[in-house]
Image 1 (cartoon, one colour):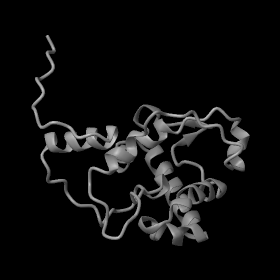
Image 2 (tube, rainbow, N blue to C red):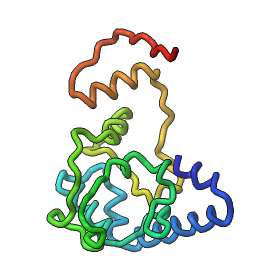
Image 3 (cartoon, helix red, strand yellow):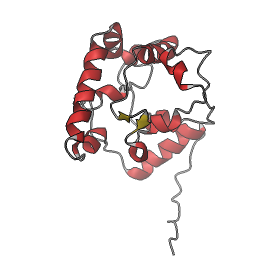
Image 4 (spheres, helix red, strand yellow):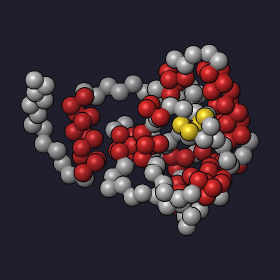
Length: 175
């Protein structure tokens, strides 16, 4: 979706955003974090938060950031929609567990959606991709071949932690 969004941008904005992505990916790969991201499916629980904080400490600006505002706000990824903070913006320059005030959400939807596909063999966590690498080809992606109703049942099962009956739901009356 991100690649399609960039491709649909008019010039010169498209080229500017592509250049921002390229610089961000170069910065990421030039850090020790680049190597750690390569094996993200095998991280330990403590690694998830640590890597997230290390990523923010690199100071890589979102390629869509324009004048300190989201340039794709209506189309921003779900994970961006779920990252809600009330701490001062200057704290983002030195993120730590004790200076970032996150708004608690009763549930995060992105991990539930990501769990609709099975984890890679040996993986402990959902292998996420930093936004700065989103334009690169995802060679390990596979086509989803399950029927929609089955995926929807799995979504609600993961979301609620409860089994979902296989009973069909009546269509929504739009009249």
